[in-house]
Amino acid sequence: MKRFLVVTSMALTLFACSRNAITGRKQLQLYNETDIQAMAVQEYRQFLTQNKVVSAGANKDAEMVRRVGQRISTAITAFYKGKGLGKELEGYQWEYNLVDSKDVNAWCMPGGKIVVYTGLLPITQNEAALAAVVGHEVAHALAKHGNERMSQTTAQQLGGVALSVAVANKTPEAQNLFMTAYGLGTTVGGILPFSRKHELEADKFGLIYAALAGYNPQEAIPLWERMAAASGGGAPPEFLSTHPAEQTRINELRKMMPEALKYYKPMKR
Ligand SMILES: [Zn+2]
Image 1 (cartoon, protein in one colour):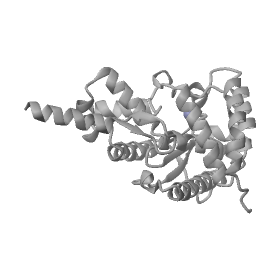
Image 2 (cartoon, protein in one colour):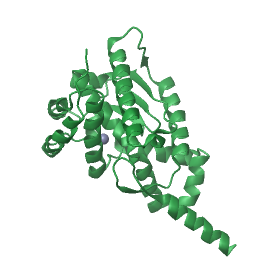
Image 3 (cartoon, rainbow, N blue to C red):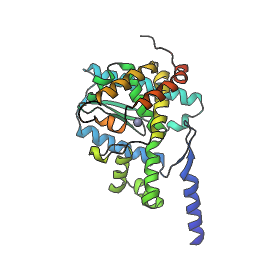
Image 4 (cartoon, helix red, strand yellow):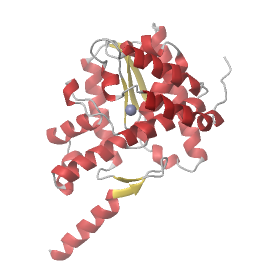
């Protein structure tokens, strides 16, 4: 029995801390990516049935969302393969949907499940700015920020082993944790913003992903200025409550720009 315990805790330790392939940062990762992706598929399906999906066939905006998603995912796949990181995208089955909602919001679940809300489009205004937002959200997924956040919450509150079993079995408790970790809680008050560290990583790699997909990353600067202007009056839109459009963010984006521009090859129209 004692030996069994030692073996289990060792396995958990080995599994728990891993270096992220793209950010190079060591992270607490208590959850198996396969389990996380399985939960994402389930939550994504449920979200799409409960919200009004704009069909891409007849709608220019929905087509734009699909085009941005396809270009970004194709570029990322080639980029990861080129770096010998193709395995990182195992299980990714990219999907891109526009949903009819006045919320200013967009997200990407692990496994490449993307949603853009129609309310975001008056602020993005052009395709390259939309690519900056989608790139940012995809970067959160690929940098495994949600897994890290779930793992940190677990480490604080519950026994890691018990909860990884809960996640594998998709218990309601694990689902709640998942929804909170990915910023998909039902009430705005329940949504935790990603940490500043996570936001900086998502901004940095989001710019690179947009650039790799042929979108000018410099569009991110006026985009965040429009975000800042939009959050000026009344209640902040959902995306802005978790993504403050402060001057410091815009300053950081400017600093990241020379690196992102190295990846930028304008696409042929
Ligand atoms: Zn973010």
